[in-house]
Image 1: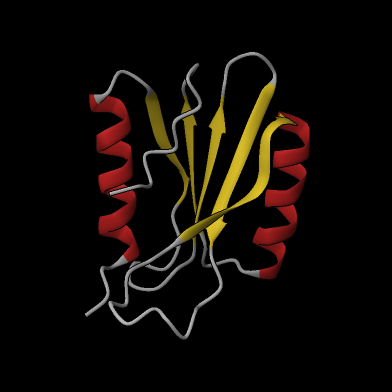
Image 2 (image 1 turned 90 degrees about the horizontal axis):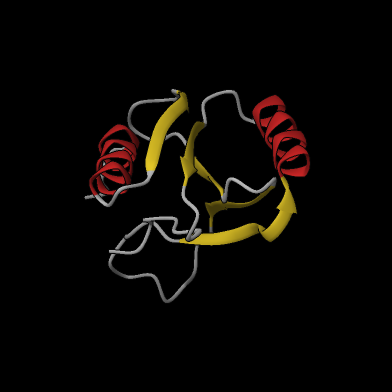
Length: 109
């Protein structure tokens, strides 16, 4: 059974805040199956964006996987523009923003 997006989003925010970063949900999507995007702002004008990885035939454990959509060093304006397009395409997505000078996404288990 796949973890609901609402639970996963809550866990990412809790892990980030517990590690000394600041995280907040900027957009709530579909509770059960919305896509999750995470912006990691480094507080120097740069950011990275992570989003859902495409499904793989090797993915037998049904675990959510993430990939870099925009790499670290992208401008925050680029990330915001990309998210505006993503929201236009999928209004049910979740969007979390993490502010962390170290650039941690907190998506790994």
